[in-house]
Image (cartoon, rainbow, N blue to C red):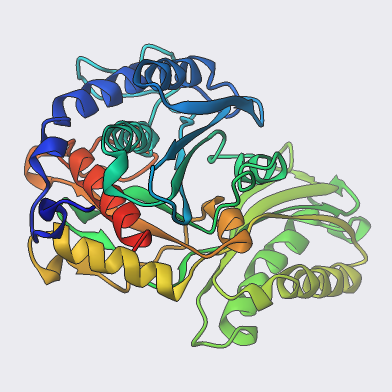
Length: 399
């Protein structure tokens, strides 16, 4: 039976608020000891120690460092998954805080330490209140979200089976929104992430005798400009897409025409139907420009993460819960989207689910630096709010 407090609006229940100091302590412990993709050994050990302490069933060493905790209610019902990521970034922290990273050049600069603390808080609360929800909850602690991606190998290892997960939810602390807000929508939330590496092969020579050469820099410059016409002239203006050439390297001297040039970049889009269009059109453009100059090229195109696309029913569930927790309906941001990517998308390709943003910025406290910034930090009061939203989703999903 669900307790009355779960039905109250605009309130985080006292039993979760009492966890706030623990949530902060867990988050800060994780923040002090960040680890990169598939190297989250100390992080996993910390999570396992808590699960053992609380008597929660778990399986560890999945996809190297991943963990799945399983919490059963005595009341039969559906199986809901909750996913969090736990890896850090190769960034040197600049925050002057007591819990500053102890690992040189590694930092939790995207909030994954907060995600893990929220998931732990949710696991603890549910384990202590098994009679207040129905069915089973599987909490997935996933490595390597920042790349190369831990979701896909965890799925391949069977984390959505035995028992079979029927739907899944997850959150991302989001410094693009103020604390006390929730960004949730059905359909596309985050973009596909794809990368390309292109090498242009020309013919080098003296900068004063260009007629003897095939200038790879000139060819590359035309390619960089023309690739932007894919967005401006080939993609429907009502679609959202980005093509960025982030690196261009060529040449070794001011009077030397470079024989090769290398460029790297990324492509982002929401519409899954565009998946094969970009590499095809890029090859046409690059090939045409190279042919006109007598140059050759090699293009490596990689599909990393598909777009994050939320299920309508699950998004409505999260939205209804968020309306009960945030201060006013104005705290719900339904059109919150980003061209950033997330491998939560692989889970959402397998089963219905919802990924949402939990506003975590506090400008007054100077906790509003963007994600992946060396001074990224967030308002820790959001941790108990995240637990409350997850718990209410579990309670509603079972009814």
